[in-house]
Amino acid sequence: MKITDVITHQLLCDVQTPFTSSRGWWYKTKGAMVVEIVTDEGLIGWGDCYGPASVAKSVVDSLLKPSLIGRDPFDVEVLWEALYNKVKDYGLTGMTISGISGVDIALWDIIGKATGKPIHKLIGGAFRTDLTAYATGLYFTDMSRLTETAVEEALGYKAQGFPAVKMKIGLGSMKKDLARIEAVRDAIGGEMLLMVDANHCYNVPQAIQIGREMEKLGIHWFEEPVSPEDLDGYAEVSQALDMQVAGGENEFTKFSFREIINRRAMDIVQPDVCAAGGITECKKIAALAQAHWVQCVPHAWGTAIGLAATMHFLASLPECPPCLVPQPPMLEYEQTYNPFREELGGDVFSHQKGVVKVPTGPGLGIEINREILDRFKVA
Ligand SMILES: [Mg+2]
Image (cartoon, rainbow, N blue to C red; front, side, top):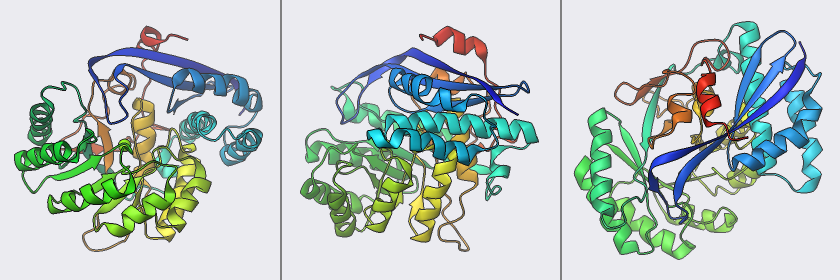
């Protein structure tokens, strides 16, 4: 089989309610970059690249596509190395790895379709076919009703049966953050897991100080307490706190994660399959993590394609550590309106009390709705 074409689809939609996090930029639109790889046998594979869509499109079109035409999709790791070695001299880790990630996912989709197997069967099998999902939401929307809206939203997820919820923090005042976390904790009760995501808005002493207070509220993990460049800071925060420190959504390739894991800078690493290097690279990152007894719980914020790829990857992760009552890695299930997640791949992701079934069809196990692709395509 040979690759005959690589087509990129840059998508854009309006969001229903503009929102922000501690990063401070307001999301009024959502973008996505979908990769379509076409073969001479008529099989098509789909991939998803994380990050600014126009940049990812340029990376795939100009840098990666020329190296893929005429190649066999089954040579997925050979192609990964070829693409990586083509871009590494330019210091272009980041968005170039995002491009490679989308290509890698599309290649696995083709391999699955060619063999009639879901991707998880090709990467070691499923340790679990039901994934426990946690709801990601509680962004900052109405700045005059921050606590009220967070409580209302969290109670909505509880009513839907989600066993866990992740909220955004980072309001520029520890007092405000803690009051809002406490209100959510009080509202949902002690049984439901509650995670917080600071999107790296604190420095080390602030992170440790708020972390100690959050430990009293039974917060399950503290995501991105400090800036991703500050690995020493991450290690300090992790050592100072009893609670789990998570991060890694903005890290790329096994080489970045090697440093994080070697230095025990995080208790939970969160590679994104659409950013960190695709399924091929994330399996290696997960193996590095397992070898150091660090949990791998992937970040997910993409389209139906990215979500499906994440689910196959999650299915293939062994328990860490294996035991009578293990804590399987949870699926991040973002809850803001996103037609690229909800409509692009059909209705395969609906959850029952926070449990989502891993797709079982060939490849990613989803059918792409071209009408949605055409409706939102801007380039
Ligand atoms: Mg995050």
